[in-house]
Image (cartoon, rainbow, N blue to C red; front, side, top):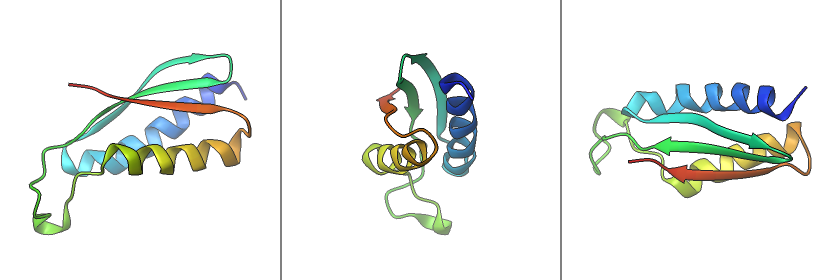
Length: 83
């Protein structure tokens, strides 16, 4: 499986997760063994009302990196925060 295809699968998986709080994850680029994704955080309040909290960029990066590493050892993930 190409890194682009794998990246699209992983992005779709995590996009579903962050959409609960109004966030978005998109595939920006796949070049060599580097996968670049964009993350637009949601707008849930800081008090996590209704059990909905915004996933911090660092946590998203770690979760996505671990998923990518299991499925494509050696690949690198870059997460950029989008406006």
